[in-house]
Length: 106
Image (cartoon, rainbow, N blue to C red; front, side):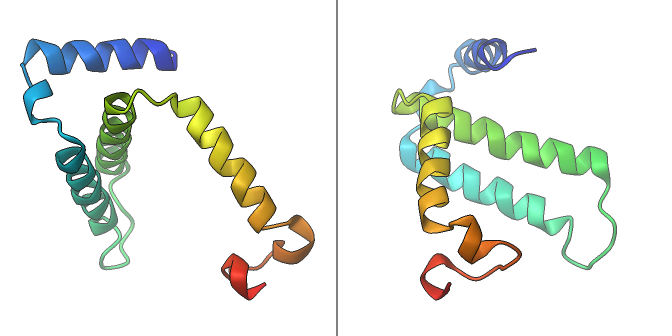
């Protein structure tokens, strides 16, 4: 299944339930944060996470990210490529390889 098919399936899922009315940018951003916290919860006590549950939580985060991008009519491929380009400039290999410091501390 490619990204366009996932996007269409997500559109149908939301439309069929008349949920567009609830998908304000603010609500979608909150949902991303909530689902990200649920994803993190699987690592809370250092145990090995249930991988099926972890996949579900990651899918929820990705789904809300897609919905927020669609709300602004942003091309996900373009904004991700743009951000990678910015990060490549902020974190040049010769300064950042093998280091976890923030760009302004390299």
